[in-house]
Image (cartoon, rainbow, N blue to C red; front, side):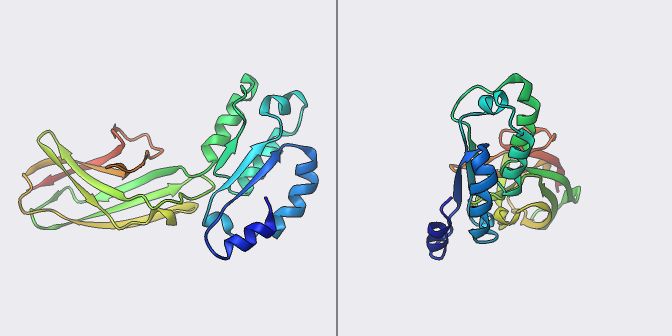
Length: 224
């Protein structure tokens, strides 16, 4: 990370930063402590942070470097991506690396969804969505959040105005209102939630809920 360059460009547009040499004692003990405090506070909320390994993870393991300390440093700095240079990772570190990946970047969990069991044609359906970002960084692209009603005979997708970039860290609650079209066929529909798709990149929720493609199935609604 070049703090002076990042500060200059950051005054003109949102820009993230990348730090090479991750794991190296010189970087961990000297270069990072000198450079990181010079970076603008909260930069990670606007643009991604990336790290690249010094050597590779198997070499960290061979040299007996403190891998927990290395991982924690990246998480404390809200890492979104990490380049390990395509070298194999020792099996002994599998659980540790899996846990690291599960915290890196954004991971959106649906904690609760609430909606009426039935709604009439032409009426508004209120959907309360309680979500949590269990990762250490937000998403930086404004992909749309969709509500979809689907059954065997058809489906209707509603784009919400929710800005998922605001799901920085922690828990959030969205109160979404959709209007059921007058010409929508009556019947029971699955209530589904999805991010992106429809020609854009899609994001799958980190949830145990049943999936329908990129959508999480979170309930049922009867249209009368």
